Amino acid sequence: MTTVKHLTLSHFRSHKRAVVEVDNRPVAIFGPNGAGKTNLIEAISLLSPGRGLRRASAEEMTRRPEALGWKITATIDGGHPHEIETWSENSTARQTRIDGKTAPQTALGRIARILWLIPAMDRLWIEGAEGRRRFLDRIALSFEPDHAQAVLDYEKAMRERNRLLKDQVHDPAWYAALEARMAKAGHALTENRQAALAELASAQQNAETAFPTADLALNDERAQAREEALRHALAESRPRDLAAGRTLVGPHRADLDATFAAKGIPARDCSTGEQKALLLSLILANARALTARLGTPPILLLDEVAAHLDASRRAALYDEITALGTQAWMTGTGPELFTDLGPRAQHLEVTETAGTSEIRPA
Image (spheres, rainbow, N blue to C red):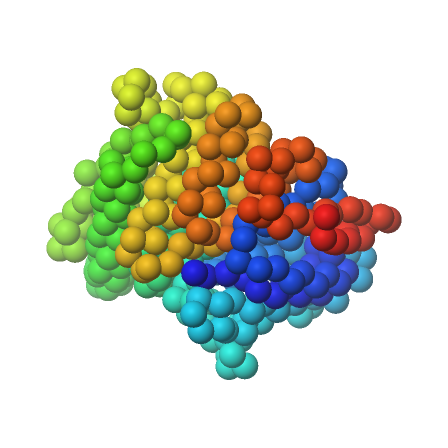
C-alpha cells in the first residue's frame, strides 16, 4: 500500500507552515470555503510529475505577501519509504530531491501513483478537447511513468516546428528533423493512451460498482497512426500548417469520447450528476487497474467529492474507497459529509485566520 505518512508545507499558498501526520486510512478534510483544503491536497499532487492538480506556476503557489518561495517535504511509504522534497525559490521552476538526491520530476512517477478529481473537471465532457486529452494523459502516466517524457518530447518538438511555421520558414530539412522527433514521441504517447483505455475498459467490465460504466475511445484517426504514418502525415500537412501558422495533425488534436454505457448517451449530454458519477467511475477504475497491476492502490485526491452526489451514492463511494484500501484524501465543507466513513477514516479540520491556514485533527 502506497501512502503519505508525513507532510510538511512551508509558505505554500495559504499555509505558512503545516505539519500533517497520518496513517494508512483515508483522510477526510473539512472546513469552510477558502480555508485552504484544496491547497493541502494540491501540495500532495506535486509529489507526482507535472504542475499539480491546478496546473499552477511555481510563482502562483508561493505564499503572499512574503513571496519567499515554497517547499513541500513528504515521506511516502510503498513498502520502502522515500523522502521527497520539492520546492521553488524566488518563483523559479520547481526542483525535486528524492532521498536526498536531486532528481527529475519524472522520477516521482515511479515512487507513487497519484490520481485526482477536482471540481474544475466536472465540466470535462462539455468543454474543449484539451482538458480531456490532459485527463487521459494523467491516466496513461499512472500506468506508464515514461509517458510524461513522451509528452514532453512531443510538445517540445511541436513548439519548435510551430515557430518555423509562424516565421514562414520553408527549409524541408528542418521540418523533416522535427517531424521525425514528433512522430517517434507521438507514436509512444498514442500507444500509451490506447493501452490506458484498454486497462480502464477491463477494470470497469470486471467490477461491481454503484457508479456507471463509460465507453471510451480516441476519435482522431491520426492519433492511432504508426510512427512512419504520422511522420508522413506531418510532412504532407506542411502547406496547410504554413497557412495556419501551427501544426494541424497529430496526437495533440485527438479527443476522448465517452458514452454512458447503460443509456447509450454521450457524456456531454448527461445530467450534471451523471457526468460527475462517470468521472468517479473512471477514477475508481483507474485505481482498481493499478492495484491489479502493481499490487498496491494509488493515492487518491478527491476535492469537494460530495458535490453532485446524493447520500446513497456518497456512501457507496466511501465503501468502494475503503474496499480498495487506498489512502484517499477527500475535502468537503462540513464533517457531516463524511459521517458514513466513521472510524474507517481519519479526519482533519482546516481553518483560516487572517490569510493563514491551520490544520488540526478533528
